[in-house]
Length: 159
Image (cartoon, rainbow, N blue to C red; front, side):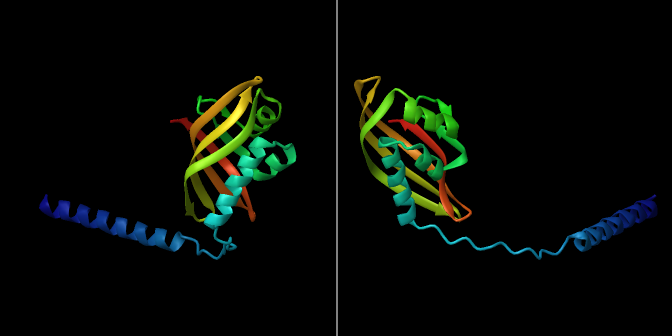
């Protein structure tokens, strides 16, 4: 019985090693090279945040489309989440109008072709014609897509 157990163990071990060697040989060689995308800079991201804030105060459909991803996820501090089309339409035709915007506590973290920008947004505006003040935290995710920096996601949160 002991010899039989040793024989079974040896066969299982040999089968395992043979499969492992087979899998090594089956892996395709990587020959594809990825075109290098220039590294993002904090200055580029800061400029993108400033441009977005300018577009919030003076919304123009073409510039908003240009600076946002087609797959944009735009989250409000209320919990409402909009896609790109809803965000742009609401900004242009909605009840809230920004009069002035200011940011503080800015931070930027870059990882490859993606950047995360955080800040506190203080703004004055009108909501349905009535004065409204805004003081919220913001997280923005930008991505370099085909050499063009675009807003991929935005989430606001209450402070």
